[in-house]
Length: 468
Image (cartoon, rainbow, N blue to C red; front, side):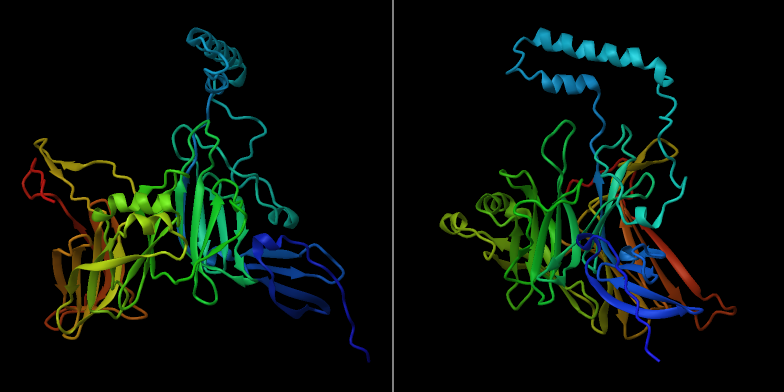
């Protein structure tokens, strides 16, 4: 008997999900099926002689490594659009521009009653979760979301994954705004960090910039710059493969004047750590040197280490800055070091996320006095495993290396099945661990323990700490 053969094809966007990496044959009764998986995380089941998948699942976000929110510009009124159109070079008289704006406002007011005074949405608007989506529609991202709302709730959640996929999802209904797959010479780029390095303003023609930092199969640093609203690769549409491998990436308090994008620092490990910046241009290097005295970065927050070290960058002479390129790096000097006590090794570390917003600067007490929050974006929480048993907790300032607080949980136990979890928000450090019963305890009280530590500038109300 001859083995039956089947032919078929599967149409999808390779730039979105990457090439097919695996395909396997299985049967449902006597009907053959083919299970297809792409490098970007798309899984689909195909029937023979059909180009439409029977079902598919997008599993790219299961490999997420970083996420950032993109604040969308608020919607502009017709009067604001008219004001932009009436540029002083076109309509020189300020009185004429004022009249044009009021005429546009009057038009909006005339249409306001017909729209239900803004209380009802358009009848064509779809509600989240309503209706059904076909398999073919699932392969096509929704129209890019380019405009927010007046209250700041509508944003884009942009994810980077270890499978090379960058996906932007709407916070309103979870719909995909755009998806992009990154590959270097046919191999997947593992994405480490995602940054919004420039945010667009209402009625602005300059797009928001998304800078993606990852590494290729050889371990070299790869950087991609995209339009954050559409996912389109900017510049010449290529990835920037740099001649080094970064150990960590962080934002710098400086902006390049030419492109108005925030600078990124790439720390390079080695016997003598170095610092690279992005964009790797002369203007960016000069902008960094203007603030370099206040910039510190650290190494040693990896599990298994016993020392945390802080470094500062040294700026070269102007002649070297004038010839700055993608291969140029700054030399560094050690600024401080923090050693864990003998018999302890680092277990985990938690850092402050700069994307957080502070609602209140203090806690108002019953007598209307205020305890002011100690908010330090440079705080790092270290958890160590002790040979004597339990875990040690340390709050360290990453600029000065100063120990702010420490404690020991003697009956804590951390392992693969009992992980240590920690996060920082405002003036709070929240961490969780497994705790066994104390030897002298009469009843068993083991289980997970969650600790919430709040930090204030002083233990006295209305007192501020002005020290640096």
